[in-house]
Image 1 (tube, rainbow, N blue to C red):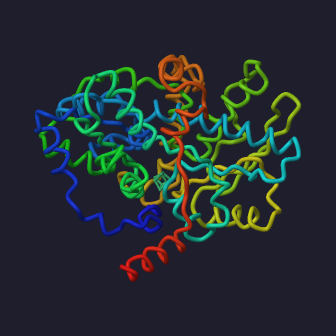
Image 2 (cartoon, protein in one colour):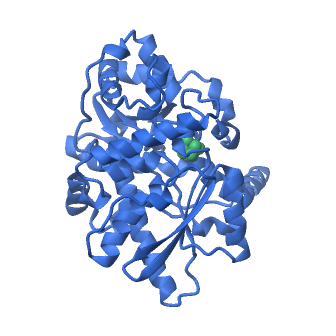
Image 3 (cartoon, helix red, strand yellow):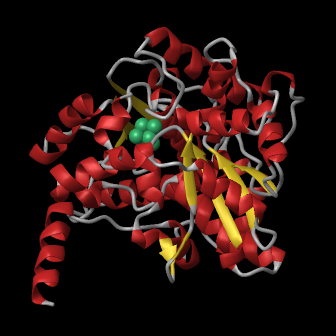
Length: 398
Ligand code: SF4
């Protein structure tokens, strides 16, 4: 996948990530939590002989339980949380923009793909304030697991080990960024990708094919359909539109599916009618396509209010850590279709309707984008060129 070539962590690819996971599980003092990204469930089955795009969510949860994880949670829960924060941020920015505020950075660019975030930091650092400050679902999950959930359990965050199962290597790099740690203790301790999970399952001699289905644990395992579609190109912005529309118009959406945002063309655009306010959306996947949209932002000619970008072709379903798909579009199409199907099967399909998310805000976080949410769920970006030069300078001075 393209992800391997865009993320700056190729050096990590050969490292054995199996052992730290097994060590954590074997340590009686640790509480080991799994979180699984939406794209993983559409692809993991491939390594066990299932047809491309077969959803193996229930078997995956059973396998993680058998491996010995204490809690099996879902990154989709945190995707719902990301939407609450990013959707609110989008509305705030559009509000300021429509009021003539010249300082507000438009369009808002999504920030859940670390391959894309690194690309902006390295090649377009002047646009880093366009990136949403909302952390990615992986990092929001870690921050909540080690604060809210640790407090619920009454344990110190250092006893909790968060293991994320992700579609790519860029997520390993993201988890290791120093700003995503509290006093040196990372929010996400270990990130492994889909093929590494398949290897772990085989190593443990688990008969994946015959496993029964089981459900994620609660509260951090409950998600809406909006969280599920995060795994495919266009899904993040569709999820954001579902919530932003209802928060903005205070009316229920007439139709949940934004067909105009779907598909696999490299660059797509659509105008969504927010009850009289036209909201212009741009979508790109693959960094070659992304560059075209970013150049427009740089030149001041971008027509959009919001842009979703994913570094990998197809979005995370096509991530470099997924079972190989040889760039075949029909495999990506099937994986995307599986996610849209899971969304359709869900009773709740809008992030703000997730009862566990509502409870988290009511009892812990306060308002979306409020002070506590900001502290736990938002981040900042760096000019990587500047950061490298500063590092060299500081070390020369010592
Ligand atoms: Fe990773 Fe998804 Fe970004 Fe690819 S699109 S680099 S899989 S986060």
